[in-house]
Image 1 (cartoon, rainbow, N blue to C red):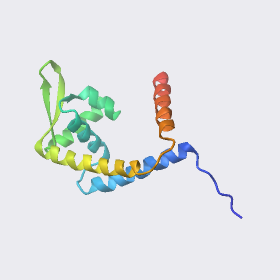
Image 2 (image 1 turned 30 degrees about the vertical axis):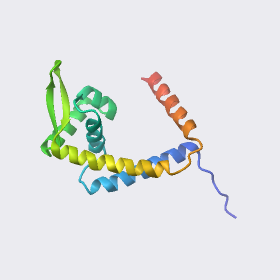
Image 3 (image 1 turned 180 degrees about the vertical axis):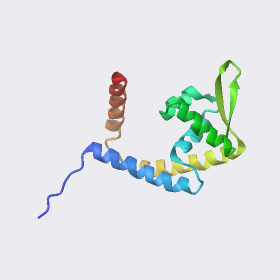
Image 4 (image 1 turned 60 degrees about the horizontal axis):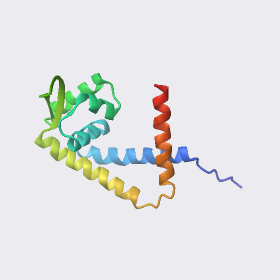
Length: 143
């Protein structure tokens, strides 16, 4: 007789994250966008004119990595950088019309996934939020 193993909460969170990532990657493949670029486009769509410092922090990437991402998206005519009128050392990022269309598809993908997650009664949803906060706090102490 085989023993049934119970997954830990951490394993379940990891599995859910992996599945969400796979679903999003498959849907993004249809529009030719990678996950990191999708997150960038989605954020810029939600906060037009965000500067590169905030964007790098949101995406948790180094400034040089962000610059390379933006350059690639500029070549695809999805985004444009402009000098911040209040601080000439900063660059703001905006979506171009094609970027707005792509960001709309990305947002739809994210909402579809969110609807799936919301359709499940997560009795421990509050506990997972608390866990997330505690992990963020712990991470802040390490840096």
